[in-house]
Length: 418
Image (cartoon, rainbow, N blue to C red; front, side, top):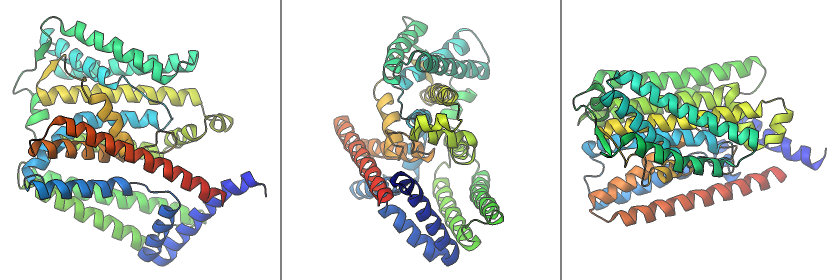
């Protein structure tokens, strides 16, 4: 066997061994398999979860209000807009590309919503759909410039950043802002609408049950194919832990106002994209193109179509995030999408575990990453500290996340070559 073949097959052997141990020894085997994966550089969400625990512990120690149910509800509201934008960033980062214009696209979308809904009297749903479609067109233009002319995504989207910021200012005119009707469905969605407690508990149960059902179906299909699979005992225990955690979170949030519907929609989008990334042919193609574009092309994957889908999704999510932001602030203004929106959206994806080098990432990166960033912002605000500290701390966390990713890549490479 050649050195290249050994490099490719050795990690697969380790994965099969880990699966066999997990299946044969239940929870203990799964724990040992997880330990081996960590030592091999497959860290998953471990670094960001540990970091989040540290951040919450520090801020709770400094200000007991931080983990109060009231403050956590506010934190969930604040996560939604940039979190949805970050979900789109995950798509392009998985291909090893970047989109620097998501902030401007979200601001443009906010302006389109305000102009069509308030100034021209469109139904709010039609105005929102038009705004998202405008974002999709932006992504399609980016993809064509990237695929047909070979323009680097950095340059294409940097040009877009300037162009769509100018379009946003043009749409809003001299007034610079459009107030959305207070008391409307859109504004209530962004500020005042919460899940009824019973509905929140039902969703939590369905989420845990769905996790178990999906894992059980996969395990059964692997067994029918003669492959190793995780035991039903382990899957049931894992889903039970997820269920307990979700029920505790819902109970705690219900002590105040409850779970915001806006966050529920964001979480739903994360689940849908996670399924697309992990359970569909398109998702496997995304990982393959991000890992090695030429190898993916030779394997028969339509590489250009994958890039089109990634750029269109990224800009569409940016537009949807702009609508969420407008609903939250009850206005479309020149400040929408500016400031640190761009940086926070990209940083959230990277901090959450999506690799800047392509080929690795998942939808939960956006969720975990934005919770980390908003936790830092929220905690410093409660302590009445300067926003300069927020930028410095977020920058440090981002640097650590990239270093962890780089070290993990080296560990995986060394492990595969061993």
